[in-house]
Length: 185
View 1 (cartoon, one colour):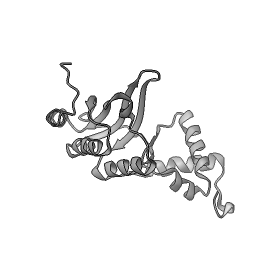
View 2: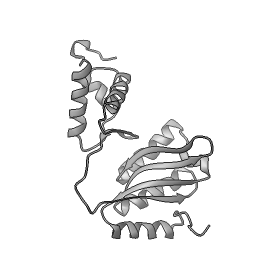
View 3: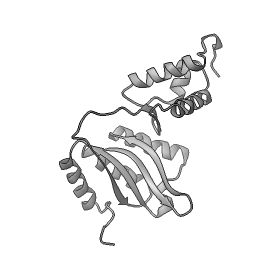
């Protein structure tokens, strides 16, 4: 809980302010940083974000924090899913993420097909080596498992990239590293 509850923001005013902060930020904002700004607990922020999402606001919770999904006017941007496979260890994952971002791609999410739960998708929003490093550091610090551990390394990524030409170059790079799932199997 905040140290000075006299500055605590209340209900709808706080949620409006959260939306404003998210709109103005070019990067994800952590729940802890939002809680500090609003002088409330992180749990209050989690509840506020759930309420805002239920109201239809395009808020996405990522491993780096909360962001507002903004519509892009660019007709050139390509968003496609790729099926990949590699060992489910931090080093292989980091190499794969570096390969994607170094080719101009943004890793929107990761998905697996679980035999009981069906499709499981987790938001990533990784667009730089720094983001990739933070993701792997967070996985190591929390001792969390990779989703791909549940599927022997097979997973999908939604990738956003500026053009079809760059996407094709990225596919070739993934194929050369043997990360792209072989379509012949």
